[in-house]
Amino acid sequence: MKIKYELIKEEKHTKARLGKISTNYGTYDTPMFMPVGTNATVKTLSPEELKDVSAGIILANTYHLWLRPGEDIVDAAGGLHKFMNYNGPILTDSGGFQVFSLAKPKDITEEGVTFKNHLNGDKILLTPEKSIQIQNKLDSDIAMSFDECVGYPSTYEYMQKSVERTLRWAQRGKEAFNNPRQSLFGIVQGGEYEDLRRHCAEELSKMDFDGYSIGGTSVGEDKPTMYKMVEYSTKYLPKNKVRYLMGVGDPIDIVENVIRGVDIFDCVSPTRLARHGNVYTKYGKFNIRNAKYKNDFTPLSDECDCYACKNYTKAYIRHLIIANETFGARLLSIHNIRYLIHLTEELREAIKNDTILEYREQFIKDYYGKEEK
RNA sequence: GGAGGGAUAGCGAAGUGGUCAAACGCGGCAGACUGUAAAUCUGUUCCUUCGGGUUCAUUGGUUCAAAUCCAGUUCCCUCCA
Image (cartoon, rainbow, N blue to C red; front, side):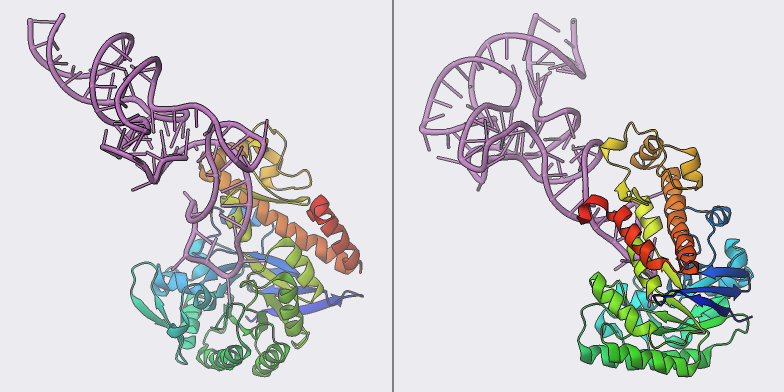
């Protein structure tokens, strides 16, 4: 079935929204955070551990699974859920981000994007139709339109051309789409230009997607610019459909963008930072590798209810990370994902109570502490 | 007892007259990371009051100049007795 979004309430002072999203694999409250599992695994975590941190939808990647193991293998396994043993909803990204991270401008044409296969160097062409066909076969719950994620800064002229092409690609993808169990989202681009964001959002709305994403953020711009990009997008999107801000997961960015009307976030940061020893806490981010934690036998965070915090000390986890033991990366990944999901739980509570502005103020005080003043 | 080889920063290891406070790797100390080519990348690692000061086993010598050449001493390795 298609996903359904139900808007439960809007916060009194802001555009923050409390909602519910119903999927083939259960109903979840929004705002929510989706952990990223590019290669059909949220790096180092088992599905049981994802459940333990209250993860809902997770994200996998079309480009990566296309190259390896190939969508036919996933199909033969009975679809992505069975293949990776995940009994929750899965969203697949289209490969649009790889246009930003892997392709060069000259590789992008009206037809699609030519990539240099990062595994063996082959030249391969990904088109809007191909991306959708792969996603149909992967049988994720939500497929994304194939878009061009444009870096920042970018000229108005380029962005205008790119937005028009992304709109045409969205239409082509929609026409190629063929999986009744799956939903399809359109992606708003347009950089920091309000008229382009508006145009893109309105045209996509006319095409009537099952949900809408905001793309082209966290590509080098500063935070105020990112927040503007989001405002210029949510402002022109229908209220009865879910809004997903792609690739954003810095804690403050989640708070700020919930306030601007975003329902869903995803980000690699909790798992990547974990592998690099960084730990999110209410009182800011720290690096467990620092020598000062050598003798620290307290948990990562006193506020956290995750498996790592309930059972292990900083000194032990530091030892694991320094010794390059995978269990350390796993414990920190569990913790960081749990931190971001818990953050969305608090934000939902604040929306319920119409206190999100107070929440933001307190959040900044706690998270940035002394450095801010 | 004899013959040869070697001793370089926390460790390993380049360097064989000036461009050497000394490559590189490891280890140490920090930093970055936002739809994952990322268990990756970057900086730093003799002392310093940032002017400079002391280093290449050690002592002495040659030279305008020595980690680099010469001699003594100590220790280590290989082979022969």
